[in-house]
Image (cartoon, rainbow, N blue to C red; front, side, top):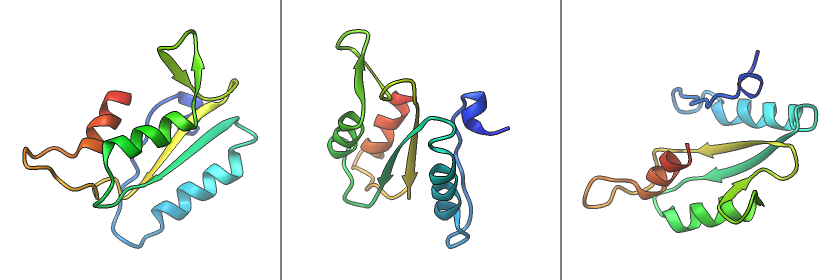
Length: 106
C-alpha cells in the first residue's frame, strides 16, 4: 500500500546522498499516469521565499467550487515534492516563511 492509496502526507527523511530525491522522483514518474497523480516539484534553497512558493503552487492548480478552493486538475491527486525542505533562510523571529505556508496548506 502506498501513500496515494491511503491519502496521507509523507515526510521522507534520511542522510545526505542516500537517494531520497531519486526514489521519490522515480515513484512519481512511474505511477503518475496509473494512479492519476499530478506532481508539483519544489526545490528549496536559502533564497526561497513564501511568495515564490505560493506562486509555483497556485500556477499548477485549478479553481474548484468557486474562487476559494484550489485543487489538482481534473480528478488527479496532487503530489507536492519538496527537495531540501530545511533550506529556506530563518528570519529574525525564527520562522521559515515557505515552510509556514506549507503548514497552512496541510
